[in-house]
Amino acid sequence: MADYFVGGKEYFPGIGRITYEGPKSDNPLAFKYYDPEKVVGKKKMKDHLRFAVAYWHSFCADGADPFGAPTHPHPWITDAKNPMDAAEHKMDAAFEFFTKLGVEFYAFHDRDMAPEGASPGESEQNLRILAAKAKERQQATGVKLLWGTANLFSHPRFMNGAATNPDFAVVSLAAAQVKAAIDATIELGGQGYTFWGGREGYMSLLNTDLKREKDHLARFLIMARDYARKQGFTGAFYIEPKPMEPTKHQYDYDVETVAGFLRAHGLDKDFRVNIEANHAELAGHDFVHELETAASLGIFGSVDANRGEPRNGWDTDQFPSSYYETALAMYAILKAGGFTSGGLNFDAKIRRNSVDPADLFEAHIGGMDSFAVGLEVAQRIMDDGKLGNFVKNRYASFDTGEGARFAQGKLSLEALARLGSAYGTAGIASGKQERLENILNQYLLGL
Ligand code: XLS
Ligand code: CA
Ligand code: CA
Image 1 (spheres, rainbow, N blue to C red):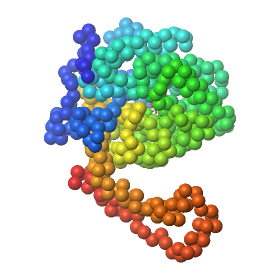
Image 2 (cartoon, protein in one colour):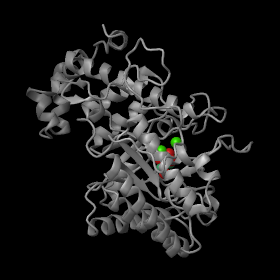
Image 3 (tube, rainbow, N blue to C red):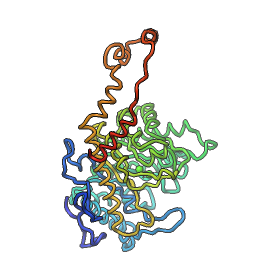
């Protein structure tokens, strides 16, 4: 990957290329476990993990929260002449960051990259201009686009939803944005396109027609898919589940809900899920539950890698740091066959009081190291086979004989009941959960 600085302007001075120094290093700006070229199983670490940086959290979010003013000064904005100029400087900062960190992918919303114009036409033009500049920077550096998306939640016009808005005019404005964002994603060679329905839900059922809103959402997604395919987009479409926030209830509640919706509307061939760890938690699930559910339904796609704060009920979007969680996640991902179009996108933000420029690097380094450890642990579990074999054997009674006939749909309930009478007693077998948890801990320590 080539280094990237434009016109000598460096936005993260004093920080060079981040390299792997190994677990004994005490350099906060070095990888301890993420060794991109190291082969784990059959692939290099970097090809397993496919890390992406989120444009919005890293270069747009400024530390402001509902209680306080921004705390993260953005030099790429303060030294700009106008919003388009600021967007270009921000892009330079972004590509400097990607290349110094050595991350091969990024993800963006239309409005992260290009400012909203005075009309839909001007907004589209702004995006087209900046996407062309992003394309030049991608070509110069080798950095690629994991996925693009449209921000259909920040502007006040979306206060009542985007595709599910009760006002048809707003639905059409959302379409103008999605069309332009799809065009930009195609132009940038994006490997995916994501829909996160931030305001596709309701605040009160007293003013909501659920059936119409969900039908409109499906109609909108069908149109977006058909348009993108017509334009030659061959990548994956992702729906990103989240149960709530900012709405009281979001229609894309969790993986299982999304799967039902996709099937009901014939979208399951083109759409997969982009699973965010923090959203899983808000839905009352473990991250790994959502991953395994998606894999079991054949719709696993990509991951927004972050974590929540289990004692908080909101989307804290912290950088991942728990090896236990990353190991379970990577085990689920390896079992699902690994990433194809997807990757691990750090949809995570540094804290309001993380005000040093180096903090953004250290946050990503920690997240990448955490997933590198998780990958190595998961590969050990796969290679050793103890856990996998235990699960396989647990269901062995369905592999042959009457059990296999049952699984193949060849038994009636009467026949099954007759077998039950013949068996008499059964079922007293340990699930061995504690033993398996102990084995997992051994793997975590590399033993
Ligand atoms: C917000 C979502 C959002 C999507 C992209 O909670 O995580 O950032 O990932 O629109
Ligand atoms: Ca996300
Ligand atoms: Ca989130």
